Length: 106
Image 1 (cartoon, helix red, strand yellow):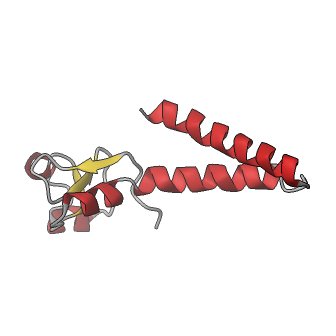
Image 2: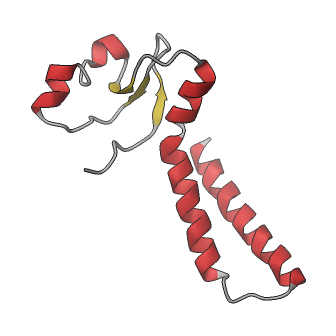
């Protein structure tokens, strides 16, 4: 089963990560409370998170996966480049692709 689409965020009361997108796990979503949007402020992804930094990392998973995909695609496109100066160009291409993606997010 594919993961719940992002964006994910820390729930209004903290200690949980939620999504605006349903978890889409059918009846289990209702039985387990994952669809209790009023209570959690979104569809529950994860709960009982003690540290805010841990919740931030979990909430960042969809974007991190997107960035990994971008890095992979750019690596494939630039895999034939050789030499130190060309490696700098590859780094610059990757950096530019990631920054362009981040601008869309923020």
